Image (tube, rainbow over all chains, first blue to last red; front, side, top):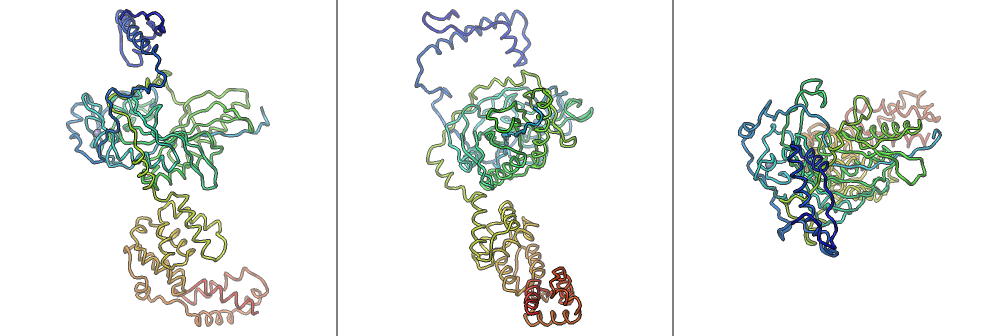
Length: 110
Length: 484
Ligand SMILES: [Zn+2]
């Protein structure tokens, strides 16, 4: 994998440092300049690999939703035991009134 | 643009909490109003290593909704909708994105207007946040408390086409959809508990235009009243903007019921970049034809069919046209799930209009008791009233006791209370007495002064006491008028 597209195949979508910074921001990741550079190169390789697949003639091939050839994995609608509340809340940084206490929220619910 | 006639265009998104025993992807109880954080497990808390497994009961209910809305069932997949907000501990919500389970369809409103359905897909609900400290509002709050009992509760989101043209029509759609969701046993229909939540996409355009204006999405509509008012206010706001030469900006707005206005939500642009991708921990859902047919066959009667069934009974009774008030009683009785009682009473020989009226008025005042009321007792009571063995007021009193006691023999109860209907002879005798006592009033009444009907009925009621039978008395008075 060199990151370049094989002859005759579609070029990989270009990815720049600003894309990596944007994606990192969406995932709430704080990256150093060195990391941004490293991940820009690695992500370009991943995209180049996807471009190899995109270059194939896949007309009439259904998208793969899951690597396992399974569907309709279901459970009956029956109540199972929950966790003990104290045990659950013991793992929280802050608790008030049997609820998780979280810092001030900035922005609206999506 | 002043002087332009404006048309309001509305599409609705209705989130319906499904009436399952458990959550969508775990076995925690789906139960409203429990102690905070008592219905939580590793799956709905998003703990590492936990895996979701789809609830068959939720799929079944989603398919019932689809079948009732004439949708097609499609093979579907679940996606992760990624966002950072403490109402979901996983930092994503599992939802159906571009391959929903139900596609296309429609809902016919009671007046016959058809609203198209785009899709009805499965997703999980979020936890409940309460904002505390500061001024208690979300942005002024110092901190928030989160209860994850609701996180993972199954929802079906029903998206309509932008076919709705007024606030009243939006209310009619939401109300009919609610009735359908209750009828197919998908929802308890309790808007006040958040079981049904509505978002409205509202835009305006010059009447006759066939392109859509810029729309705003209005959230926080938790009653039919809020829905109607919010749409009216939002449409007026947009018209005022356009008439003053400004543009409508596409945005999400929050309905403030107390201030009767919509206000923009503050959201960062990137908050809407949800980076949907297929949920790798779930496999595709593709109900086969057999399952689909079983679901469609188990639907039972829908509200429109139930209304039609009652109207046919009234029509078939042969005592005149169905009045607007009776049509309202039909809708009310169907909404409250009391129509089976009326139909059973009529097939047991009770008069249709009387059975409908007693169900819509007296039984509807205590629906829970009405559901427990034995059909045979209700049928016998309404028949006794229909045969003139009980006056209307006596019948209501006996019915009250039947409802309170969960049934009983109406004849025995009437006997204990000393209820005897006015016999035909006693009606004539009392009317004679009252007419003789008021010769001047009778003269004016006989001369055509209809207002005196009330006077005579009142005087006769006083003399007859609890055995008073308004119908028999009115009939006797009218008979005499014709003779006079
Ligand atoms: Zn759970």
